[in-house]
Length: 67
Length: 331
Image (tube, rainbow over all chains, first blue to last red; front, side, top):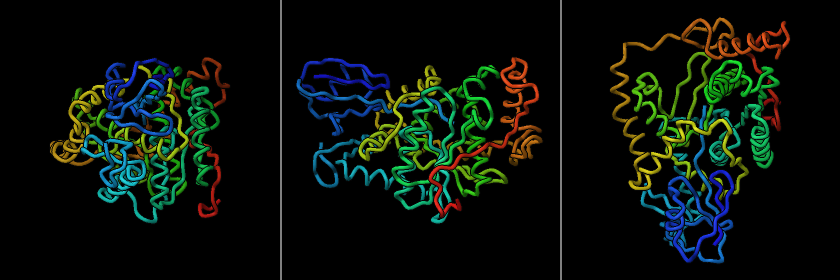
Protein backbone atom coordinates (compact mmCIF):
# COMPACT_ATOMS: atom_id res chain seq x y z
CA UNK A 1 0.00 0.00 0.00
CA UNK A 2 1.07 3.57 -0.56
CA UNK A 3 1.20 5.82 2.50
CA UNK A 4 1.34 9.56 1.81
CA UNK A 5 2.60 11.42 4.87
CA UNK A 6 1.55 15.05 5.29
CA UNK A 7 3.16 15.68 8.65
CA UNK A 8 3.20 18.42 7.38
CA UNK A 9 5.89 17.89 4.69
CA UNK A 10 4.80 15.50 1.97
CA UNK A 11 6.58 12.16 1.90
CA UNK A 12 5.65 8.78 0.44
CA UNK A 13 6.20 5.30 1.89
CA UNK A 14 5.37 1.82 0.65
CA UNK A 15 4.17 -0.77 3.22
CA UNK A 16 3.00 -4.38 2.93
CA UNK A 17 -0.70 -5.05 3.60
CA UNK A 18 -3.17 -6.01 4.84
CA UNK A 19 -2.83 -4.13 8.11
CA UNK A 20 -4.93 -2.25 10.62
CA UNK A 21 -4.42 1.55 10.64
CA UNK A 22 -3.12 1.20 14.19
CA UNK A 23 -0.30 -1.11 12.94
CA UNK A 24 0.55 1.22 10.04
CA UNK A 25 1.05 4.12 12.46
CA UNK A 26 3.06 1.96 14.86
CA UNK A 27 5.33 0.84 12.03
CA UNK A 28 5.90 4.46 11.00
CA UNK A 29 6.47 5.56 14.62
CA UNK A 30 3.56 8.03 14.49
CA UNK A 31 1.54 8.89 17.62
CA UNK A 32 -2.15 8.30 16.66
CA UNK A 33 -3.43 11.24 18.71
CA UNK A 34 -1.60 13.73 16.46
CA UNK A 35 -2.97 12.60 13.08
CA UNK A 36 -6.01 11.76 10.95
CA UNK A 37 -5.74 8.89 8.46
CA UNK A 38 -7.79 9.11 5.26
CA UNK A 39 -8.40 6.89 2.23
CA UNK A 40 -9.58 9.35 -0.42
CA UNK A 41 -12.36 11.33 1.23
CA UNK A 42 -13.10 8.57 3.77
CA UNK A 43 -11.67 9.07 7.28
CA UNK A 44 -10.37 5.86 8.87
CA UNK A 45 -10.38 4.72 12.50
CA UNK A 46 -7.52 2.77 14.10
CA UNK A 47 -9.21 -0.61 13.65
CA UNK A 48 -9.94 -0.14 9.91
CA UNK A 49 -8.02 -2.47 7.61
CA UNK A 50 -5.97 -1.22 4.66
CA UNK A 51 -4.75 -3.49 1.88
CA UNK A 52 -2.00 -3.55 -0.75
CA UNK A 53 -3.93 -1.68 -3.44
CA UNK A 54 -4.86 1.19 -1.09
CA UNK A 55 -3.40 4.68 -0.96
CA UNK A 56 -3.83 6.30 2.43
CA UNK A 57 -2.91 9.75 3.70
CA UNK A 58 -1.61 10.46 7.20
CA UNK A 59 -2.40 14.12 7.92
CA UNK A 60 -0.81 15.92 10.85
CA UNK A 61 -3.22 17.74 13.15
CA UNK A 62 -0.51 19.48 15.17
CA UNK A 63 0.22 23.15 14.57
CA UNK A 64 2.78 25.43 16.16
CA UNK A 65 2.90 28.76 17.98
CA UNK A 66 -0.14 31.01 18.34
CA UNK A 67 -1.02 34.41 19.73
CA UNK B 1 -15.99 0.40 14.85
CA UNK B 2 -19.60 1.62 14.71
CA UNK B 3 -21.22 5.03 15.09
CA UNK B 4 -22.74 5.25 18.57
CA UNK B 5 -25.80 7.08 17.19
CA UNK B 6 -26.81 5.12 14.05
CA UNK B 7 -24.61 2.01 14.05
CA UNK B 8 -23.08 2.77 10.60
CA UNK B 9 -19.32 2.43 10.06
CA UNK B 10 -17.51 5.04 12.17
CA UNK B 11 -15.35 7.74 10.56
CA UNK B 12 -13.96 9.41 13.69
CA UNK B 13 -13.19 7.98 17.08
CA UNK B 14 -13.28 10.28 20.13
CA UNK B 15 -11.19 8.10 22.39
CA UNK B 16 -11.25 10.47 25.37
CA UNK B 17 -15.01 9.90 25.57
CA UNK B 18 -14.99 6.24 24.47
CA UNK B 19 -17.18 7.13 21.48
CA UNK B 20 -17.09 6.91 17.68
CA UNK B 21 -19.28 8.56 15.06
CA UNK B 22 -20.10 8.34 11.35
CA UNK B 23 -19.43 11.53 9.34
CA UNK B 24 -22.92 12.94 9.76
CA UNK B 25 -23.17 12.36 13.50
CA UNK B 26 -19.58 13.47 14.10
CA UNK B 27 -20.37 16.89 12.59
CA UNK B 28 -23.45 17.14 14.83
CA UNK B 29 -21.46 16.08 17.91
CA UNK B 30 -18.68 18.59 17.16
CA UNK B 31 -21.01 21.56 16.71
CA UNK B 32 -22.90 20.61 19.88
CA UNK B 33 -19.62 20.61 21.86
CA UNK B 34 -18.87 24.16 20.72
CA UNK B 35 -22.42 25.30 21.47
CA UNK B 36 -22.19 23.83 24.98
CA UNK B 37 -18.86 25.51 25.72
CA UNK B 38 -20.29 28.86 24.56
CA UNK B 39 -23.35 28.46 26.79
CA UNK B 40 -21.50 27.07 29.82
CA UNK B 41 -19.08 29.99 29.97
CA UNK B 42 -21.51 32.62 28.61
CA UNK B 43 -18.98 33.35 25.87
CA UNK B 44 -21.41 34.94 23.40
CA UNK B 45 -24.83 36.56 23.48
CA UNK B 46 -27.34 36.03 20.70
CA UNK B 47 -26.95 39.53 19.23
CA UNK B 48 -23.20 39.97 19.71
CA UNK B 49 -21.10 41.18 16.79
CA UNK B 50 -18.29 38.64 16.81
CA UNK B 51 -14.85 39.30 15.35
CA UNK B 52 -13.28 35.92 14.49
CA UNK B 53 -9.47 35.93 14.33
CA UNK B 54 -8.72 33.87 11.21
CA UNK B 55 -5.20 32.79 10.31
CA UNK B 56 -6.39 30.46 7.53
CA UNK B 57 -5.38 27.32 9.47
CA UNK B 58 -7.81 24.53 10.37
CA UNK B 59 -8.70 25.81 13.86
CA UNK B 60 -9.77 29.33 12.94
CA UNK B 61 -11.58 28.22 9.76
CA UNK B 62 -13.46 25.51 11.72
CA UNK B 63 -14.31 28.06 14.43
CA UNK B 64 -15.67 30.54 11.88
CA UNK B 65 -17.74 27.78 10.24
CA UNK B 66 -19.30 26.60 13.51
CA UNK B 67 -20.10 30.13 14.74
CA UNK B 68 -21.64 30.94 11.36
CA UNK B 69 -23.71 27.73 11.46
CA UNK B 70 -24.85 28.51 15.01
CA UNK B 71 -26.25 31.79 13.67
CA UNK B 72 -23.84 34.34 15.16
CA UNK B 73 -23.09 37.57 13.27
CA UNK B 74 -19.43 37.02 12.46
CA UNK B 75 -16.75 39.03 10.68
CA UNK B 76 -13.32 37.56 10.03
CA UNK B 77 -10.10 39.37 10.85
CA UNK B 78 -7.01 38.18 9.01
CA UNK B 79 -3.63 39.67 9.85
CA UNK B 80 -1.25 39.45 6.92
CA UNK B 81 2.11 38.74 8.58
CA UNK B 82 4.34 39.08 5.51
CA UNK B 83 6.09 35.73 5.97
CA UNK B 84 6.77 35.20 2.25
CA UNK B 85 4.60 32.80 0.26
CA UNK B 86 3.36 31.14 3.48
CA UNK B 87 1.39 34.26 4.41
CA UNK B 88 0.07 34.66 0.86
CA UNK B 89 -1.31 31.12 0.95
CA UNK B 90 -2.87 31.80 4.39
CA UNK B 91 -4.71 34.84 3.00
CA UNK B 92 -5.81 32.82 -0.03
CA UNK B 93 -7.40 30.10 2.16
CA UNK B 94 -9.08 32.74 4.37
CA UNK B 95 -10.51 34.67 1.42
CA UNK B 96 -11.65 31.44 -0.26
CA UNK B 97 -13.64 30.53 2.85
CA UNK B 98 -15.10 34.05 3.37
CA UNK B 99 -16.13 34.32 -0.29
CA UNK B 100 -17.61 30.83 -0.34
CA UNK B 101 -19.81 31.63 2.67
CA UNK B 102 -20.41 35.30 1.76
CA UNK B 103 -19.02 36.45 5.11
CA UNK B 104 -17.35 39.84 5.74
CA UNK B 105 -13.58 39.85 6.18
CA UNK B 106 -11.23 42.55 7.46
CA UNK B 107 -7.56 42.26 6.49
CA UNK B 108 -4.72 44.10 8.20
CA UNK B 109 -1.52 43.84 6.17
CA UNK B 110 1.34 44.57 8.58
CA UNK B 111 3.69 45.67 5.83
CA UNK B 112 1.10 48.17 4.53
CA UNK B 113 -0.11 49.24 7.97
CA UNK B 114 3.25 49.52 9.72
CA UNK B 115 5.82 49.34 6.90
CA UNK B 116 7.49 46.24 8.38
CA UNK B 117 6.51 42.56 8.23
CA UNK B 118 7.09 39.96 10.99
CA UNK B 119 10.51 38.69 9.74
CA UNK B 120 11.87 42.28 9.64
CA UNK B 121 10.32 43.13 13.02
CA UNK B 122 11.96 40.05 14.59
CA UNK B 123 15.31 40.82 12.99
CA UNK B 124 15.34 44.51 13.95
CA UNK B 125 14.31 43.86 17.57
CA UNK B 126 16.46 40.69 17.84
CA UNK B 127 13.51 38.81 19.29
CA UNK B 128 11.93 35.49 18.38
CA UNK B 129 9.45 35.82 15.51
CA UNK B 130 6.71 33.99 17.51
CA UNK B 131 7.09 36.48 20.36
CA UNK B 132 6.74 39.68 18.28
CA UNK B 133 4.10 38.03 16.10
CA UNK B 134 1.93 37.08 19.11
CA UNK B 135 2.30 40.55 20.64
CA UNK B 136 1.37 42.26 17.36
CA UNK B 137 -1.59 39.98 16.61
CA UNK B 138 -3.07 40.45 20.10
CA UNK B 139 -2.76 44.24 19.81
CA UNK B 140 -4.24 44.45 16.30
CA UNK B 141 -7.10 42.06 17.16
CA UNK B 142 -8.05 44.12 20.20
CA UNK B 143 -7.71 47.48 18.49
CA UNK B 144 -9.80 46.45 15.49
CA UNK B 145 -12.48 44.98 17.80
CA UNK B 146 -12.66 48.14 19.95
CA UNK B 147 -12.57 50.65 17.08
CA UNK B 148 -14.94 48.76 14.80
CA UNK B 149 -17.49 48.20 17.58
CA UNK B 150 -17.32 44.41 18.00
CA UNK B 151 -18.60 42.92 21.26
CA UNK B 152 -16.15 40.04 21.40
CA UNK B 153 -13.10 38.51 19.73
CA UNK B 154 -13.21 34.72 19.17
CA UNK B 155 -9.96 32.81 18.62
CA UNK B 156 -9.36 29.22 17.51
CA UNK B 157 -7.35 28.09 20.56
CA UNK B 158 -7.95 24.38 21.08
CA UNK B 159 -7.43 21.83 23.86
CA UNK B 160 -3.89 21.05 22.68
CA UNK B 161 -2.94 24.75 22.65
CA UNK B 162 -4.37 25.32 26.11
CA UNK B 163 -2.97 22.11 27.66
CA UNK B 164 0.50 22.74 26.18
CA UNK B 165 0.56 26.34 27.47
CA UNK B 166 -0.51 25.03 30.88
CA UNK B 167 2.25 22.40 30.81
CA UNK B 168 4.85 25.05 29.89
CA UNK B 169 3.64 27.36 32.67
CA UNK B 170 3.63 24.53 35.23
CA UNK B 171 7.09 23.32 34.25
CA UNK B 172 8.44 26.80 34.97
CA UNK B 173 5.91 27.69 37.71
CA UNK B 174 4.87 30.87 35.92
CA UNK B 175 2.21 31.83 38.46
CA UNK B 176 1.43 35.18 36.81
CA UNK B 177 0.72 33.46 33.49
CA UNK B 178 -1.12 30.54 35.13
CA UNK B 179 -3.85 32.76 36.57
CA UNK B 180 -4.53 34.30 33.15
CA UNK B 181 -5.43 30.96 31.57
CA UNK B 182 -9.08 30.31 30.77
CA UNK B 183 -11.65 30.20 27.97
CA UNK B 184 -13.00 33.73 28.59
CA UNK B 185 -11.09 36.96 29.16
CA UNK B 186 -13.64 39.60 30.19
CA UNK B 187 -13.86 43.06 28.63
CA UNK B 188 -12.29 46.09 30.32
CA UNK B 189 -11.92 49.69 29.21
CA UNK B 190 -10.50 49.54 25.66
CA UNK B 191 -9.96 45.79 26.03
CA UNK B 192 -12.42 43.66 24.05
CA UNK B 193 -13.79 40.44 25.56
CA UNK B 194 -11.88 37.41 24.22
CA UNK B 195 -13.28 33.88 24.01
CA UNK B 196 -11.99 30.46 22.96
CA UNK B 197 -15.01 28.36 21.94
CA UNK B 198 -12.84 25.38 20.78
CA UNK B 199 -10.87 25.12 24.04
CA UNK B 200 -12.17 21.61 24.86
CA UNK B 201 -11.74 20.13 21.37
CA UNK B 202 -8.47 18.52 20.32
CA UNK B 203 -6.53 19.44 17.18
CA UNK B 204 -7.28 15.99 15.80
CA UNK B 205 -11.03 16.47 16.30
CA UNK B 206 -10.86 19.92 14.67
CA UNK B 207 -8.93 18.56 11.68
CA UNK B 208 -11.55 15.78 11.26
CA UNK B 209 -14.31 18.43 11.27
CA UNK B 210 -12.48 20.60 8.71
CA UNK B 211 -11.92 17.61 6.39
CA UNK B 212 -15.47 16.28 6.70
CA UNK B 213 -16.95 19.74 6.02
CA UNK B 214 -14.48 20.09 3.10
CA UNK B 215 -13.41 23.54 4.27
CA UNK B 216 -10.45 25.23 2.55
CA UNK B 217 -7.60 25.64 5.04
CA UNK B 218 -3.84 26.09 5.06
CA UNK B 219 -2.17 22.83 6.03
CA UNK B 220 1.47 23.92 6.00
CA UNK B 221 3.23 24.99 9.19
CA UNK B 222 4.61 28.50 9.74
CA UNK B 223 8.36 28.39 8.90
CA UNK B 224 9.10 30.10 12.24
CA UNK B 225 7.31 27.38 14.28
CA UNK B 226 10.08 24.81 13.72
CA UNK B 227 11.68 23.99 17.07
CA UNK B 228 9.00 25.83 19.08
CA UNK B 229 8.68 24.52 22.64
CA UNK B 230 4.89 24.36 22.23
CA UNK B 231 5.36 21.58 19.63
CA UNK B 232 7.50 19.58 22.06
CA UNK B 233 4.88 19.95 24.81
CA UNK B 234 2.11 18.94 22.40
CA UNK B 235 4.04 15.84 21.33
CA UNK B 236 4.60 14.82 24.95
CA UNK B 237 0.92 15.35 25.79
CA UNK B 238 -0.17 13.38 22.70
CA UNK B 239 2.00 10.42 23.78
CA UNK B 240 0.27 10.50 27.17
CA UNK B 241 -3.12 10.90 25.52
CA UNK B 242 -2.59 7.90 23.22
CA UNK B 243 -1.75 5.72 26.25
CA UNK B 244 -4.32 7.33 28.59
CA UNK B 245 -7.22 8.88 26.65
CA UNK B 246 -8.69 11.91 28.42
CA UNK B 247 -5.40 13.09 29.93
CA UNK B 248 -5.27 16.46 28.14
CA UNK B 249 -8.86 17.33 29.00
CA UNK B 250 -8.49 16.32 32.66
CA UNK B 251 -5.20 18.23 32.95
CA UNK B 252 -6.75 21.48 31.68
CA UNK B 253 -10.26 21.22 33.11
CA UNK B 254 -9.20 20.11 36.58
CA UNK B 255 -6.60 22.88 36.66
CA UNK B 256 -9.22 25.51 35.78
CA UNK B 257 -11.69 24.06 38.29
CA UNK B 258 -9.49 23.17 41.27
CA UNK B 259 -6.14 24.94 41.10
CA UNK B 260 -6.64 28.30 39.38
CA UNK B 261 -9.12 29.60 42.02
CA UNK B 262 -6.64 28.76 44.81
CA UNK B 263 -3.78 30.40 42.92
CA UNK B 264 -5.85 33.55 42.37
CA UNK B 265 -6.71 33.74 46.08
CA UNK B 266 -3.05 33.46 47.02
CA UNK B 267 -2.01 36.43 44.90
CA UNK B 268 -1.63 39.92 46.40
CA UNK B 269 -5.02 41.61 46.81
CA UNK B 270 -6.48 43.54 43.88
CA UNK B 271 -5.77 43.43 40.21
CA UNK B 272 -2.85 45.20 38.63
CA UNK B 273 -4.01 48.66 37.66
CA UNK B 274 -4.15 49.34 33.94
CA UNK B 275 -3.21 52.77 32.59
CA UNK B 276 -3.54 54.29 29.14
CA UNK B 277 -0.38 53.91 27.01
CA UNK B 278 1.24 57.33 26.44
CA UNK B 279 1.78 56.49 22.77
CA UNK B 280 -1.49 54.86 21.69
CA UNK B 281 -3.95 55.23 24.58
CA UNK B 282 -4.58 51.48 24.88
CA UNK B 283 -4.31 49.66 28.26
CA UNK B 284 -0.92 48.83 29.72
CA UNK B 285 0.63 48.29 33.15
CA UNK B 286 3.56 50.65 32.39
CA UNK B 287 3.83 54.08 30.78
CA UNK B 288 4.16 52.81 27.21
CA UNK B 289 2.63 49.47 26.11
CA UNK B 290 4.76 46.54 24.94
CA UNK B 291 3.43 46.86 21.39
CA UNK B 292 4.45 50.52 21.00
CA UNK B 293 7.80 49.90 22.74
CA UNK B 294 8.61 46.99 20.42
CA UNK B 295 7.62 48.81 17.22
CA UNK B 296 9.32 52.09 18.27
CA UNK B 297 12.48 50.06 18.93
CA UNK B 298 12.22 48.40 15.50
CA UNK B 299 11.71 51.79 13.82
CA UNK B 300 14.82 53.24 15.52
CA UNK B 301 16.94 50.42 14.10
CA UNK B 302 15.17 50.56 10.73
CA UNK B 303 16.06 54.28 10.44
CA UNK B 304 19.66 53.67 11.55
CA UNK B 305 20.07 50.95 8.93
CA UNK B 306 18.26 53.04 6.31
CA UNK B 307 15.54 50.39 5.99
CA UNK B 308 13.08 53.26 6.57
CA UNK B 309 13.59 56.97 5.74
CA UNK B 310 14.87 59.23 8.57
CA UNK B 311 11.61 61.12 9.01
CA UNK B 312 9.47 57.96 9.51
CA UNK B 313 7.66 57.72 12.83
CA UNK B 314 5.73 54.72 14.06
CA UNK B 315 1.94 55.19 13.99
CA UNK B 316 0.13 52.52 16.10
CA UNK B 317 -3.30 52.82 14.41
CA UNK B 318 -3.54 50.08 11.76
CA UNK B 319 -5.00 50.63 8.29
CA UNK B 320 -7.80 48.19 7.51
CA UNK B 321 -8.97 46.64 4.25
CA UNK B 322 -12.56 45.42 4.10
CA UNK B 323 -13.68 42.58 1.88
CA UNK B 324 -17.25 41.51 1.20
CA UNK B 325 -18.47 43.83 3.94
CA UNK B 326 -22.22 43.43 4.06
CA UNK B 327 -24.88 46.11 4.36
CA UNK B 328 -25.66 44.82 7.88
CA UNK B 329 -22.13 45.75 8.90
CA UNK B 330 -22.64 49.33 7.80
CA UNK B 331 -20.41 49.17 4.70
